[in-house]
Image 1 (cartoon, one colour):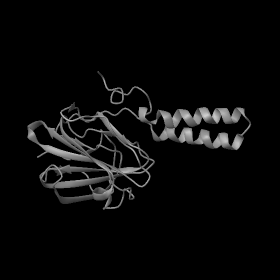
Image 2 (spheres, one colour):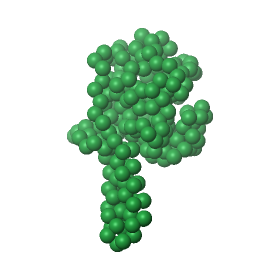
Image 3 (spheres, one colour):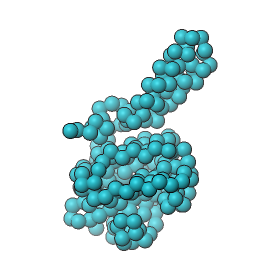
Image 4 (cartoon, rainbow, N blue to C red):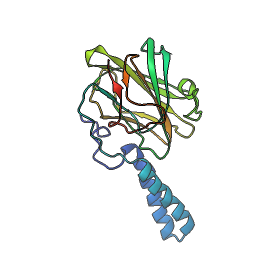
Length: 218
């Protein structure tokens, strides 16, 4: 069965439909009842939600060895880290901060097989803080690409984000650039890559999910 959230034909993510339709319908009812200001507030939230949950089509660059950004946003940190949750080895960590102004649909950085998904409940510190990677609610995903290379990417909740949606499962095969999930209302995504990865980005680089190249596998 085709996952309708991954093969989305709507201009917005299906996760956002309730946030879009409910305030628009309520706003229409309030307007009919003559409660103009309340109606305008409700309609404004519905329009904001329509913009926030936008889900544009993306075309990945053709080079299969290129590691794509899994999120829209700004790179706030690149560092070498001892990643021991699942990879069990040192890795290059790239942290991407998503503000409320970014598209929040996440995409697969490489084609391959999902080895593992681990959900960790946690706190809700601001996603641009270093401790957010360790202490915030997050969803840790390990992907095995062709050639046995293993990478990981982590969906991290933020100060406002209180809902991590993951649309893939362990042992599922994914194609680079395909939709894999969403984080609601501002958040962060960390990527763990092999140390020998040839990086093509630096701090403060702005990236787009499924299109921007983070680097190349060794």
